[in-house]
Image (cartoon, rainbow, N blue to C red; front, top):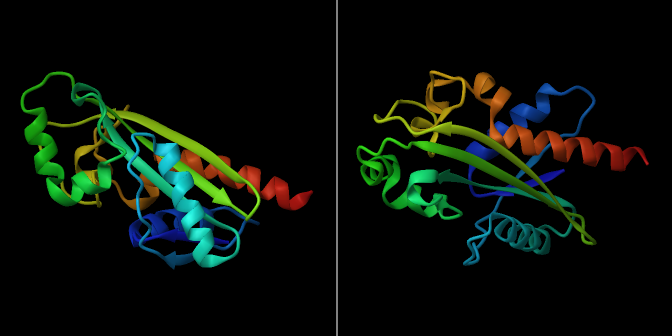
Length: 185
């Protein structure tokens, strides 16, 4: 099964999760720079990306798109998380929040699969909050997201710990269950 992304970190997390499961599939990384449509809907973005990836790959493929949604910023950066991370980064997000007391946030992930006939999508979400200070480690927004019931940010966790609870894992588990059931039919 092929996974398309420009982000090797996403592939590493997904491959780690899939490899930990017995009797499952092998994931091949297809590095692709896919254009992101202008939409404030994560599902629309993921569906468009998987269609682009299939057009290039010409066989079944899946993509993962995600976003950090911060309540006090009206769910910003949301769908625009990748761009915001590249431009203002974690420090910029912390600056935007300033001393706001409400620091609730959620990470949402959508996996979209396409086999040339039908798109299937699977959603994962984890709630948490944004600390007042930047932590070390991880990639993307990992250093500024602390999952609910944790004292550590994603950045402070090792990959195994993060993958036990991540939004990406929730979406991937749903996808794999569906995909493996389809193959058994």
